[in-house]
Length: 188
Image 1 (cartoon, helix red, strand yellow):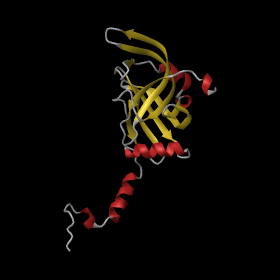
Image 2 (cartoon, one colour):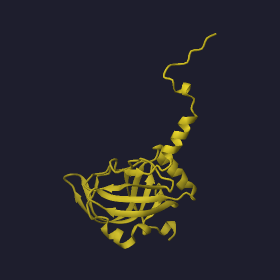
Image 3 (cartoon, one colour):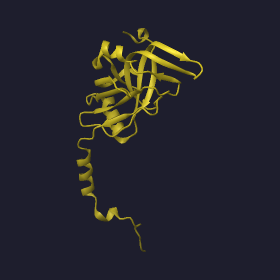
Image 4 (cartoon, helix red, strand yellow):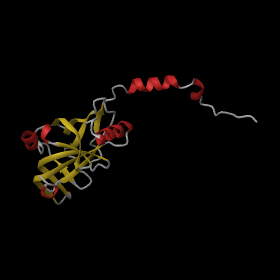
């Protein structure tokens, strides 16, 4: 499929709740939350992803950076609905430059958003509430993004294997005097 023949996808962003990326680049969280209106007034209903997950499985749904089809950054190991929303677990690819960058930014807490790229199959407009209820979604991709549309949906775990050991080694190299809470005085 060429970029010009690719389907026009809608996107929904969910912020990520970050705690670290392991040495393998594995992280998990929620790409979408059920029953919560996003900033555009869309509410995803439970069961909306069921058909796509059954049709494509985790391996058939792409992991992209900022919804750019030219920037795949990893693979999804698990995608499933639970009572809260669309739970995902994925692995950033260390042999892809952008994957390494994203892992580093996640570890630093600078990048923590997830966003779904989809086509609406079935929706109901609620004009009174000013929202659109998404009943069925054709899910194509889930991206790691900077700015999420659904602020409460977040990456909940980014494993930090080895981080604590690196921090302990770094702390041991510090001179005890450099940890003083008192300002240094200079005399002339």
